[in-house]
Image (spheres, one colour):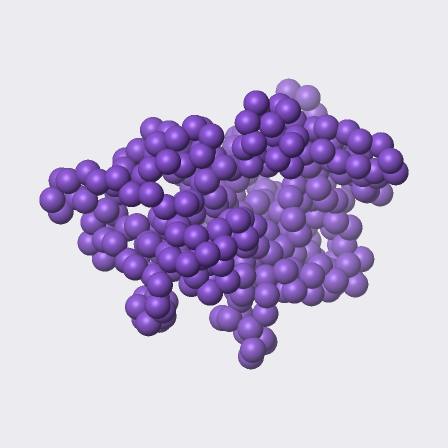
Length: 362
C-alpha cells in the first residue's frame, strides 16, 4: 500500500483509493476504483439471474435484509443490491450489545454473516458489490404516476420491478475544516474498526459527542490507543448516560466540552490540530497522532430523482412509502429513523408488510 501510494502521489500517504491487486500472477493497479471494477477483475459475481423482480431492495443493512426475509417467505422474487459490505454499518460496528437474542452480545461481522445466511436460506438473490445509479420509469419520458413498473439501473445491468425499497443507510458526516481534505485517509478516519490498528500505543482525538463517538472511543482505547480525547462542541455530550459513565470510568479517556476543531495542519501527515475553546475564545494547538470523526450521518440518497427528500437528504415517508407510489424506504436513510440496528430491522419488516399490501392491490 505504501509503495503504491508513493508511486502515484509522490509520498507514502495511507490513501485507500490506490489499490494494487494480484490475481493469478497478474498485477493490476487501480486508482480510485469502484467496487464493481474490483469485483469484475477478481471474478466475483456481478450479474443478477433475472431481469424482473417483484421487489428490488437497495441496501443490505439490517433494514434491507429483514425486508428481504419477510418478502421472500411470502413467495416474492427479491433482489438485494449492495454497493459495499453486507450488513451495512452494523458490519463495521465493533460489538452489538443491545440487539435482542444475543445475551452475550455479538460482533458486527458475525451479526452480518448470520443475517446474510438467513436471507440466502429463503432464496433471496444478493448482488454485491454493485452501485445503483438511478431509479426510473419503465417507459422513456414517462412519469412515476404513469408507469406501474420501475427500472433500477446499476453499473452493469438494469432491472424492471414492481416495487423498490430504498434501505441505503447513511455514512458518517465528514469533517470540513481547513486542512481536512489533504489528510483524509492519512490521519483522518471514519471507521475505528478499520483504521484503529494504525494507532497502537498512540494518542488520538475522537470528534463527536453522541453514542457513536463514545462507543468507538471505548473500543479504540481498549484495543489500540494509549490515550483518547473526545472533542465535543456542545456544553454536554449527547451520548447515553450508560456510555458516558463507561467513558468516565475508563482510564486514559478525557472528555473536552465546549471545544471545536477549527484547522488541521499538515499535508503528508498530521502536524497539529488547532482547537477553539468556545467558553474562552482561545485557540490552542495540540499534537495527536490521528483523528477519528463521528459527527452525525448523511443519508445515501444522492442517486434518487423525483422522490421527496428533506433538506438534509433523508427520504420523507408515510407508512414506509415515499412520495412515489411503489417506492418505499426503511432504515437510516429515512426521515425520522432512530439510527439503531434493531429499529432498522423493525422498519424493514414494516416496509415488507407495506410492500406486500401494495403488491396485492396492484
